[in-house]
Length: 125
Image (cartoon, rainbow, N blue to C red; front, side, top):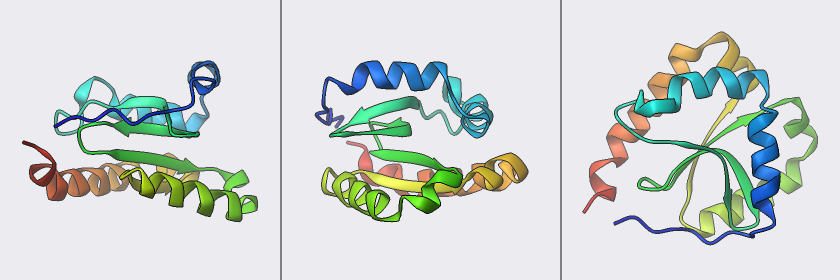
C-alpha cells in the first residue's frame, strides 16, 4: 500500500529550485534512475518529506537516496538529526558520496538494485 508522507508545503518551491539547479552528481544519478530504468521503480527527485527534502525518493518502498557532497562533512549534527527524523517517518535511506556517483556509477546502481530486490516484496501488498 502506498502512503503519502506529510511535508512542509513551504518546501515545494525550494524543491523546484533544487531540481532546476542540480549538482553534477545528482544529474548523473538521475539519468540512471529516471523513467523506471532501475528494476521498474519510479523515483522522484528533490522530494519534500516532513521538514526535509531528499535527493531521490520512491514512495512504494519508502526509499530515499541521498548524495553527500563536500558540504555534508561539515553538517554532521544536522545530517544526523535529519536522518533520525526521516527514519521516524519510516523512510529508508541509501547514501552515496559525490565521488561514488561520479567514479563508480555501476557500483552505485548495484547497491540500489540489491536494496530494492531485498525489500521490494516485503513492501508490496
